[in-house]
Amino acid sequence: MMKNSNAMILGSVLLGGILVFSLYGIGSSIASGNFEHRDDDDDSHYESRKHSSNRNYNPVTNKLYTEECGSCHMAYPPQLLPPESWGKMMDNLQDHFGESAEVDDETRINIGNFLVYSSTPQRGSYRKMLRNIGQRIPLRITQLPYFVHEHDEIPSRFIQGNDKVGSLSQCNACHRGAEKGSFDEDNIFIPGFGRWDD
Image 1: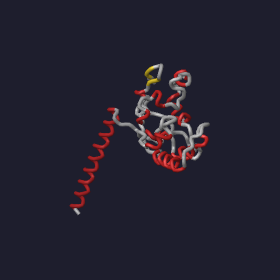
Image 2: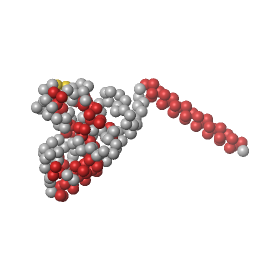
Image 3: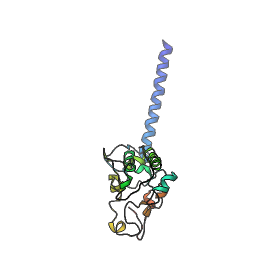
Image 4: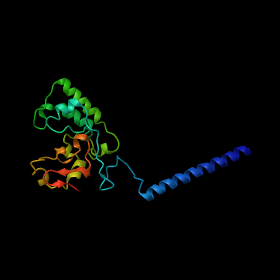
């Protein structure tokens, strides 16, 4: 009986010590600013800090996709749209934003599988782009609420009125690292106007 009481007391002391050190560590992290609350599913805000510039996606390495789709426009990182969007887009290549982008069935299936598989939602930066879309199946990256929010302060003369850019869909015109999946705010250079600092 005495052994069990001593073991319980020792266990309680150890547990208490662990809790104290854990709470101390969390408190120190919060006080030093090294603790960041991350709730990637919270759609009530876009970012907790204005200059969170890390916007990196997996670089596109699928040769078939870059050859077929990248011959007309930038080969967008698949994570910029949900899987359903890519599936719908690949099923209607005869009217691809007013143009025919038809390919043979094998190519369409291979590219479609790559896009759908590679765009499967993940936590972190991949999810930011897909916030607030609800049940919609968007086909244009430029119409996503998060995209609009991130580009709403750029004057139209920098984009539509700029023959070196022309459209917000030309990501690689201003984002120097876009081809490698990097959309960092610190690396934006608008042709004819210079570095963009939000």
